[in-house]
Image (cartoon, rainbow, N blue to C red; front, side, top):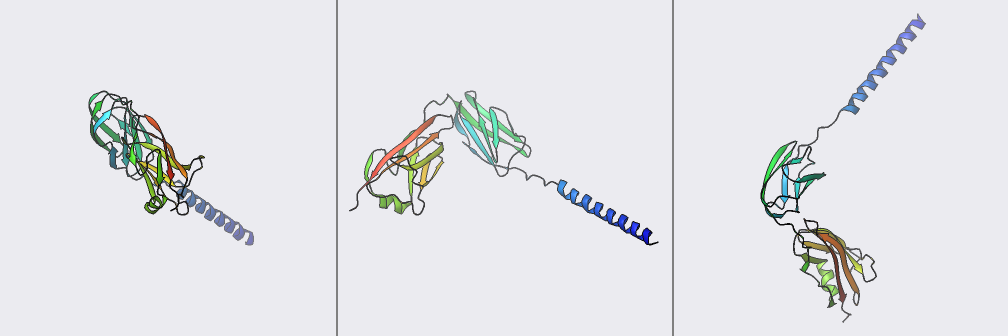
Amino acid sequence: MTKLFRTFALLLAGLLAMSLIVGCGGDDTEEEEAAPANFVSATPPGGEIAANGSITVTFDNAPADVTVSAGTVTVAGKSATITGPFTPGPLALTITWADGTQALSYTVTAPDTDPPTVTGGTVKDGDKDVDPEAINSDAKIELEFSEDVSGNVALQTEGGDDVGWLGKVEGNKATLELVKGKEIGNETTYVIAGKVSDAAGNSTDVSVTFVTKGKE
């Protein structure tokens, strides 16, 4: 009788262990549904676009199964980039993805072969006697370009060492933001260096050199 009870107990323990394993396995295979993606914006939103230009579409979540009625689309995270070449003339572009569609209208112009240029900013190339206190107080240096660009910029010493400011490029502007403890000094040559490109892929090497004035 004792042997029978022992066998029954072992069998019951085995069944309980199997039920726990099966239950845990079910939790592991359960997958969360992806959040639906909704259209947020397009850059440019409309108007003119060069035949060799590109359009960037932003969603609130990563889109799936993205297709376009013209051009080639590449998806990265929450953004989709649509590149030409597009046919000159009116362009009615339809973007379709798993959760919806979006129509955009453009006028396609001749290919853009002109690289972006620096048109202004806090300092100009060749500036001397720049007041470092004014720049440190403002906590930023800006450069403006002839068109919207993407890319990167950095604030460097004359020898090419990174000063440590934070650079970002957005729209037609590049901004260098001061990091506390990395203020620029007097009687020093600085170079804003980097590379930017427009929507058509035309690129420009950025090199703006300025010299700060001596202490008064």
